[in-house]
Image 1 (cartoon, rainbow, N blue to C red):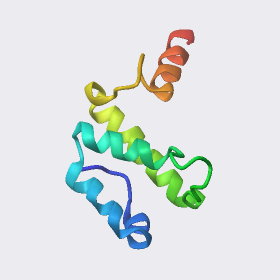
Image 2 (tube, one colour):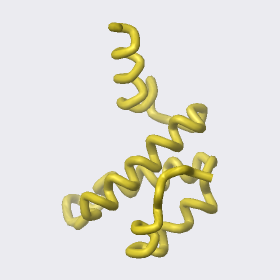
Image 3 (cartoon, rainbow, N blue to C red):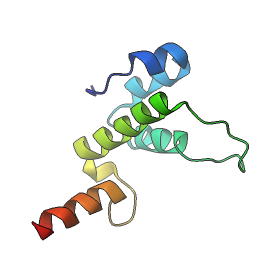
Length: 89
């Protein structure tokens, strides 16, 4: 299970609790990523900043715990940036 506090997110968006059931699967990563992407040609209203932050934290945590499920080429930008920063120190 994830460590990210999802209580407020799930209270306001109960349908997103399915993330808990999918946690640790490729389907979960894809689902969370799609939540952060406008797939409606600019008509998507989006989440308030507090919930968007929680969703981003879930994606970040998922990628940290299950790096083999990160299907982004060369790794997600936050993983790549951290690696670069680590190499500069």
